[in-house]
Length: 62
Image (cartoon, rainbow, N blue to C red; front, side, top):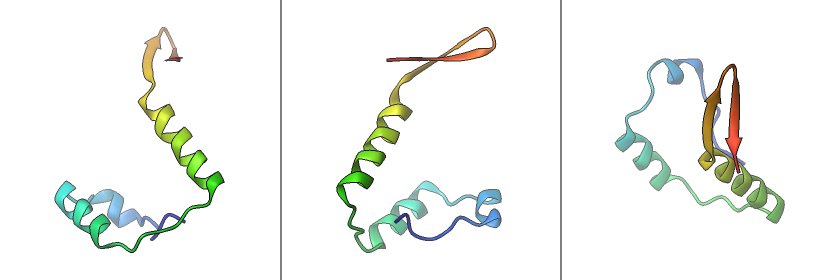
């Protein structure tokens, strides 16, 4: 579903933003089923929630 695996060498030397964009533009489209689309939407929405550090915990504001 998500393409090529990420190797340790890639994490140590990450691609530049322009290289990453070019890689995504040249990649073939991948079709998702409804459940996968909902999962990705949930992940994206959760990453945009405001996160606040309170004492030793993280509070996610909904």
